[in-house]
Image (cartoon, rainbow, N blue to C red):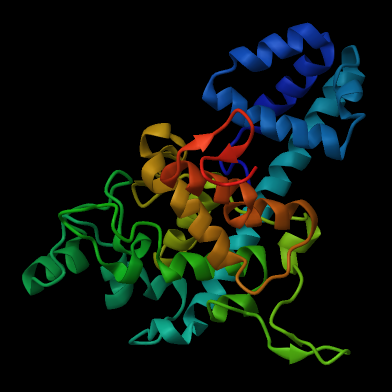
Length: 333
């Protein structure tokens, strides 16, 4: 949920470094960390949480420390690769079954997708390809011209596959294809077949219920909300599933997935895009967890936008508050 492309070696070096620092030095290191290091710190902290004694093994002198580092690096690399492969397998295999995508012809094996399939080709085209121009589409299908580049985001990322030439933010990252992929990865393949996997039923006391609890990876790791890193990850998984590339790597058929992933994260995390990104992340959480009964911190986090602070924010915009005593002019405190 925090990082797709990261070096196990770099993270383990950071785990060792943190273990050797006193509290003040660690605080200074964290405060001065650049964005890329802060992202690694999140992973390092998670590793420490899952295996608190790992740092002690890594910091052993001589051969024991070297062996511990080698083994940990190997296990992290295998886990990283296997997890990514499993996510891509689930989406790749489930995608042809999404009836509302109306694949024509039906979506087949990986080798028949990409530019070999008309709908996949359209979804993989960007703003430089006029999909209403038959000759332009023929050039794209036959020769891949213009080339697919990570800096030109493609139609599969947009709602209904439509890119507004006058407003590139319209519908961006609101694609039903992305939401389906997210549900497939985070909840279950079955959950990806509709916008809501909730089932209406009558409980033991006769009360109608439209919610179910967390399932899949979300349940295993208590994931109750998605973030920018996850959304960027799903963009990568979805795109690769649409292509004819059999195996995933950072660069496939000339397309740089690392650059693509980083650009999507930049859009969602850079404060200058906040006017779009804040609402987008909220929208994603509503769509992905639609029909899921969340409890504890997750429910609190997702319900915040409708809570008391949200109401107070609305009041600030419409009323002249007397913040000294908590009252509002003309209203009893």
